[in-house]
Image 1 (cartoon, rainbow, N blue to C red):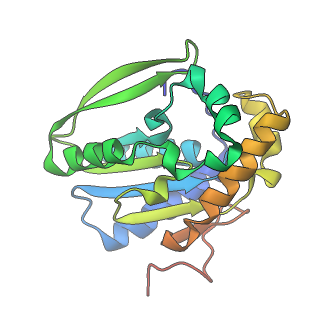
Image 2: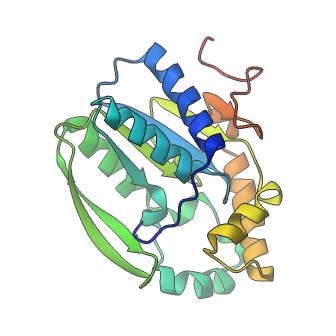
Length: 216
């Protein structure tokens, strides 16, 4: 997404290091897909950025696929659409999963890929063309990223109740009644994907070792 605000701190770097250490142990990092999901304000985009940045420094070409770019409804129309259809419609079905998985397949096949890219300033949907020919790792990032076809799924195991301060700092959206209704609906949808996670990152931005499936 163009114009997104990332506030990267030591806790995000800590979580990114944990993720990288785990995937180094289970993959040769050749056409490997990582999905990093979680509720709004949990730091998933910051962590995704740090994972990608670190891997690229190691000469492992890594790119990020932001699922927030794949909403079926245009950003300028989404609020009214939700009001008209009810907040019960907020969730996984708002995302064009056929297009998401098509882009993931482009990565796996090493092809050029055409993708939507939302400009957060203008609220317009632009088009991004990226070449996956030499890309080794793809990070799928977003609220419902665990629903994507991935080799390794990470969930940031926090709720919007715990991340309100982070949302205010980022200033992406006003926390009014409408937004809180959306956050509650998103919360339910994200939690429905929790069992898909291979790793949970807890409130201390550490791996929840009581859950991690890596060694199972």
